[in-house]
Length: 168
Image (cartoon, rainbow, N blue to C red):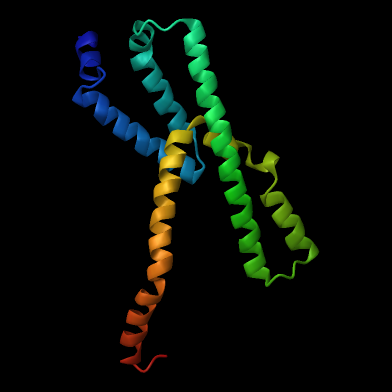
C-alpha cells in the first residue's frame, strides 16, 4: 500500500510534478512572506519521499557532498545579490519618506533594518531556497518593469474618468 502511494510520486509521474508544483508555491510564498515553518515541513516531506530514489541514483557521499556544496555556493551568491537589492531598496525607501533628511531615530531605524544580524532568517532562506527565490524575483522584476513603464497610461485613464466627476 505504502509503496503504491510512493509510486504515484515517482520521478516523472504526475504526482511528482504536482508535488513539485505545490512545494514550489510553498517555498516562494514562505520566502516572500518571511515565514518559514511551512517551507521546512515541505522540505522534510520531500526528503522523506525522495531520499531512497536519490540514494538509488548511485551517488557516492563524495558526489552528494559536492552537489550540496555547489547548491549552497550558488545560494550564497544569490543571497549576496538579493541582499544588495534589499539594502538599496530599503535605503531608497527611507530616503523618499524623509526627503533626504534623516533624524537620529530614522538613522537608527534604517541601520537596524539593514543589519545582517536582524535579517538572518531572510538571508538563510535566500540561501536555502535560492532557485525559487531567484525565479520569483526575476519574474517579479519583469512585471515591475512592465508596471513602471505603463503606470502613466493607467493614471491618465483614471484622471480622465475622475475629470467627469470634476475631480482633478
